Length: 358
Image (cartoon, rainbow, N blue to C red):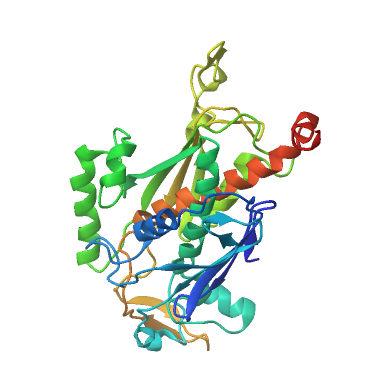
């Protein structure tokens, strides 16, 4: 499947070393101001080659809107966007065209389809996430009109964890670090992995602030379930937590319960979601990224003939995929919430009456 969302529906296309990547967004209400500078800014934050902590591949990731926007506002018709690839080095992958890179999708794509695009992973490459960021930026513009703000940051690199979460600092940090006091240690860990031709994992925290009560469609389209699905669908993600997540299994109900007074909830262990529906509190998602599987060390593998060989990679790869994955997390949060906001319009008769009754 290459589409997601019900009302705010996104379809993406393209490969890492193909001519272009793109997306089509269906369901954007007419009259939404489309800020192209904002969309480009989000892509600039995700694009490769911004610092020594990322891949050296240089892509401008300039987005071009093809349809669905007239004189700066959405028309209610599908919004199509395209991003042309300009800096492919496909020859870097010639030596792996017949072998399976460990922990990549090569093995499963080949056995599922009988053919694979070996150039940077083709469709399975994390480069596809540029289209999610572009469409997520449109979703963020919609949510902004509803008073919803999304923030994120890197809380851990390997075993080095943030002690505090400063999202303002993260927005200006070169790798979106949440804690200034340990950022230098985290940066050193990334560089150590890079210099030893290895990689390292990381953890991203994403928050949605100002989310209205009522988003989510029980029983089988619950907000937390769809968020988990969306975040797990990001390349290299191996675990997702909502609210306190795994910590909830370690405490008693008297501690985990979010008590309520007339001003609202006294805590937010639930992460802003109860029974699959937003409760008006801040939604919190913690995303765990595995180490980038592309490393420059010889590794055991097999080839398409099931012969044992060594995999020795060339090319340009991120030493820590969580850094640029941070922006993708914001995009996926926005896409799910935009979809849920549109779905929620039919939950009460008063909503329909406000629209149609003259």
